[in-house]
Amino acid sequence: MRVCIVYDCLFPYTVGGAERWYRNLAERIAAEHHEVTYLTLRQWKEGVAPSVRDVRVVTVGPRMSLYADGRRRIGPPLLFGLGVLWHLLRRGGQYDVVHTASFPYFSLLAARVARRAHGFRLFADWHEVWTREYWGDYLGGPGGWFGWRVQRACARVRHRAFAFSRLHAKRLTEEGHRGEVIVLEGEYAGGPGTDPGDAEPVIVFAGRHIPEKRVTSLVPALTRARERVPELRAEIYGDGPERAELLRQIGRAGLDGAVEAPGFVEADRIHDALSQALCLVLPSSREGYGLVVVEASALGTPSVLVRGPDNAATELVDEGENGFVAASADPDDLAAAIISVYEAGPVLRASTAEWFKRNEQRLSLESSLATVLRAYAEG
Image 1 (cartoon, rainbow, N blue to C red):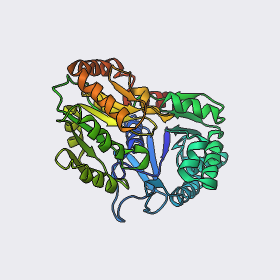
Image 2 (cartoon, rainbow, N blue to C red):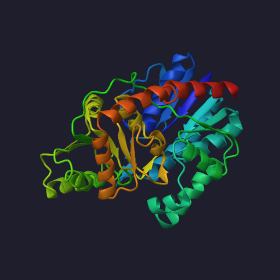
Image 3 (cartoon, helix red, strand yellow):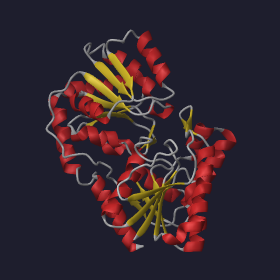
Image 4 (cartoon, rainbow, N blue to C red):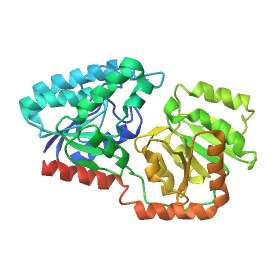
């Protein structure tokens, strides 16, 4: 089978859940002795050849900054869509399957046009489906309306659809997708679960410092929680446009000795921090999946999330079993959830480890990849 994977980013040149998914998907399909091509934008210096095992990487656009102020720029998706269209119009007959990310949308629309000429089978992943209201908040005014209309047009393209949460599978159907939406619950590619050790009084955050991650809610919540647990500390990993404000908060609160914010670090350091943490705190307003919650659970470390209409990560927490879901990102609510973890102690760490063992197969990357390959074979 000849498969073309389409996404404008490539791990590890850019880092995120979707980037990891498409790299793993490409390598897994190639390991099954299929011919795999990966279409992307160039994220590396000219003259550098990216290496993906047994996968041909083809760039269809130049190196560009994808984000401005923590939000996706419109130019790169348009240029990428045009590059995908040009490639597939010329080369689409070489593929049996084209598998694209739904976002940033124009690549899916391009594949739809090229399919008319070449007849390949079209698959698309929906990590998220945004509401019209969220589009308005994200882009504002006419831009939000345009983004929502493009998303709706993509939902109605005839294709086999995958979603990574029940929330977004339901939304995709509501947006007009007429076929089955296959839910892929597994993206975890780590090792087997471990027996949890003793926890340090440290909360950990790992992610981009962008508005929807609400990293700046951590310092006020920590300050409030330290009124009950004075020894509580925080380690905040990642970078982004909210980082400067985060550092200002730390200084204003006098928490320089209690909070570390080293920026981006190696994955091993985050793994070690999570394994010893009291809990992962992920106060995002919006998550399409929430892989880090599963990674923490594999280490016996519970999570604290925030309830919200766009937060699919809450599907990965069973209240009181592998963490807690705060009612809001307000300092009182977030601090109360952190204190609940502290008071639950080793019992919650043990139940988190048991939760992971029960759900390990369902949440594994391998289970999702096997589902995708079966869908390819079905046509």
